[in-house]
Image (tube, rainbow, N blue to C red; front, side):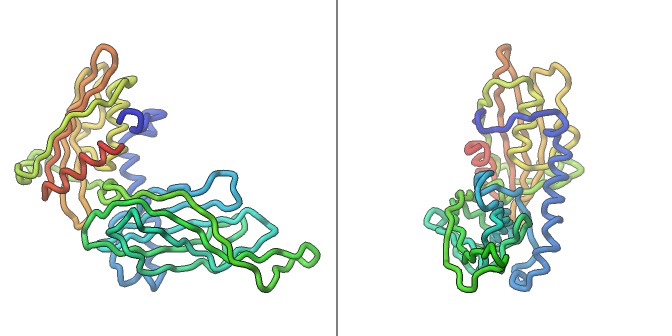
Length: 294
């Protein structure tokens, strides 16, 4: 766990309020683009847009990034595509998915990109259906498909016919964290007591050696992607123990609350007790799964 949880580069970059603000603005940033596509109109509102993930090496011919947009019963994967080869025109660009390791998903439609821009960004979309308000998980195996037309250096014009080609992209994971987003609540204790104690799930985790409690707190906050409450994201100087309260909602607008109790020993080993209450025990389990798979 402690190897996978990120270590913050500075207090500012790991602070919880900016993290939460970034996640909110990410969804708002894409809303306009998604609403402009008639093919997506029937899907309803986006619950959450995830951070972009690079699916190609940095120095390859094509730069491809994926953004997962979570709806009530779909995930739309937006692929931002850039061509870096001036001698070629790439047309009819799509991403075909192998869903063998994501069995709850079914490919419903694809919105192709007519031409992949040279040193610009164009989008193709793959629409996946899943059971409504579920948090279906799995690995999406992605193959970029397109038609290549070579450019005649003497005329600068692309050839007429071209040929079909494909390019293996990195896999894209759908995880429980994709289905949760931060929410602001005014009274954590009241909200906690209103949730069924039967939904409560608790476990303890070792987070390894850390520079201090603040670094460990920021790493877990960033991993869960929930909203810290009542200023608990700030650890008092030289504290050896600290409790963080967080609130979020799962897809389907189901509330989830978290109490995290941190402790640090003389050798800077950090332990955390994570207690979760939610509108169902399954959601509480899903939050633990996020930490266990980090």
